[in-house]
Length: 417
Image (cartoon, rainbow, N blue to C red):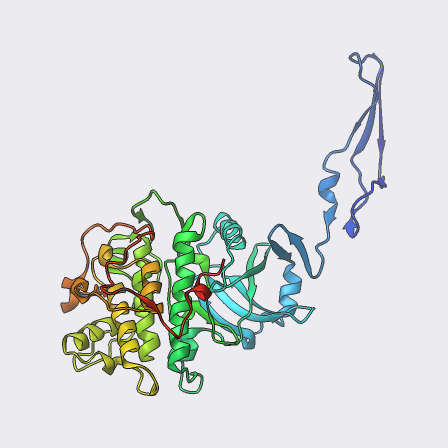
């Protein structure tokens, strides 16, 4: 048997690799000749890992991929001036958000997930795929992402007026003087975004962390719901989903905080708390209201019992309709009821906020209040199982009179087609 083996060293192969691909000399090519070969076999040429050693060079800006752009880490580092602290505009359990400016001078919000984040690669990619398919005027738009060398970054549209938390709950120097019309529009727009997530997105989505810092404001103070890092896909045939509790104390529905039961009504509860914050300019995370230092929801219910609900209104807010503000506060109380199945759907909420209706107060029951530690308010915690509303009821039981569209707000603007 005659065997001949010829090895070529330092052979550079002139394959038509893509532009900007870096190739190094290959020392792995061999040619073997056999005097006896199986039928149909000739000279054998093997390339072991040749293409693995040719690493594509990532461009400095971005590459279009499906519905989002893929940014290089260097481009985002440059956009944020090396993630300079001065460009930090927010943060949370999943990482820090920076303001960035791309090469084409587009402003963006860059969310860099922290090393401590529990969000793994699979969760990250799921988030990207989900968000890229969701578009609505009241949801923050995802522009792109970066998955490079262990970095996981989301790139969102930048909104000029930062978050609702800064506008109404920030320090005196940073607060914005919002009139009643703007506040009402923020409530309605946020509710509209939740209707889309609950009823129109496929599959339906429960946000799980509706709060003032997750509602961003554009240049006209139109609201956009952001931070879908906590969102989970929510199939129609699931009554409740047992999951790890994620959210913010002060906004947490009791059945979710205590039992881990997640339904759309969890978002409804959080939205009710958010409405009270918008109306009062007071934070739900503080227990500092009234003589008994109550939480915001508990205080609102006490004022309702004492027929002094308007006392909760921001004292700096002067020009407003008492009837309309009372309707908004009452809707917030409907949303924060202890028994989740008693709460309205978000579509019903939008109807009550946008139409001049008489609310059915006989259906209003006490709120649920969750506290991490034991307190005298513990008896209000919900212990019964909750059921998810499908949001498709043709009759709104919370309304006792024939609704008419309010002169101030157009329903057609809330549900764009």
